[in-house]
Image (tube, rainbow, N blue to C red; front, top):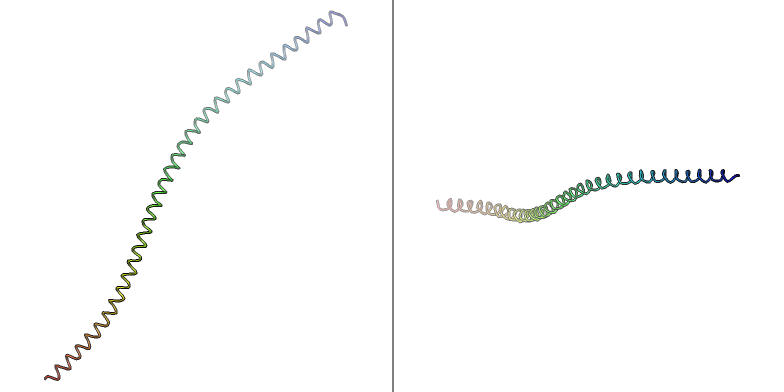
Length: 124
């Protein structure tokens, strides 16, 4: 190999290294641009998702509050039902006593009317 061939070979290798470096640099620039676009798209999407997340959290809070209000109302209604059931039981007991008194009083009235009738017949 001659000195001229070696110089040509060194120049060729240098050109090859330069070409590889340039290609890698170009690839790196394209890669960076792609990454920037991806970052930009992700930032936009994350912003959109955050807004949606905030709306969903707000809706969850609203529904939880509504559920708590309904739970309290249900508890109040359950208490009222228990009160009315107790009152109903008491009224049924009073009714049973009054019905028994009615039967007893009607029987006494019949006996008294019969006695009055017998007494009036005895006077006549």
